Amino acid sequence: MNDTPLHVVGNVVDVPRQNRTSNGSVTNFRMASTSRRWDEETKGFIDGATLWIDVACWNELGGNVARSVTKGDPVVVVGNLLTESWESETGRRSANRIKAIAVGLNLARGWSDFTRPPRVDRSAGLASPQEPGEDASSTEDPYAHRPTDYTGGSETLHSTDSEVTSEEPAVPALT
Image (cartoon, rainbow, N blue to C red):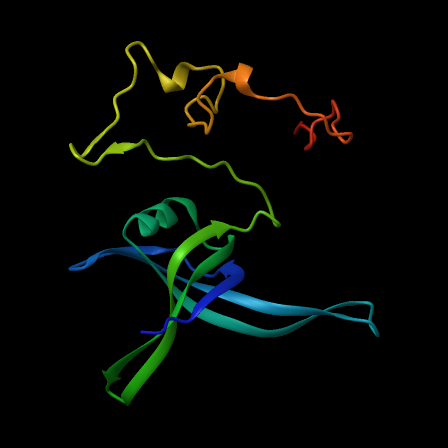
């Protein structure tokens, strides 16, 4: 079967709805994506046509979307385009839908904090235990619970030799 992959950038236009089905759980939401182009005559952007499309997020993705995304959020959706058909009182109907592979907040329009769920031991079906005396809520570093890609400690990291490094933060502190 040939899939039609696509990426859609737009805004969530309703509250995501999570449902359980015989095939697992699904979270559905509707999004709108409006094309824009620069008009040299008016020296401004002009809105084009708006794509309105339903998005289906299955299983773990759906649960994460239900916890993270709400009406009005700018999102980027990656998935496959499907056409669903059904019979109604007025005859045969169909609608396009995206079966999402990934959904993310559009960070060109704001920022976000990402929380990774605890790792699960799939053989036992339980979350990995914390070290004795470890309490994630009492640590000073709010990101200490996040796993890292390096294993040798900070001494294995190399210092930066870029000419563009600065002591100033990349984002000014909020006051």
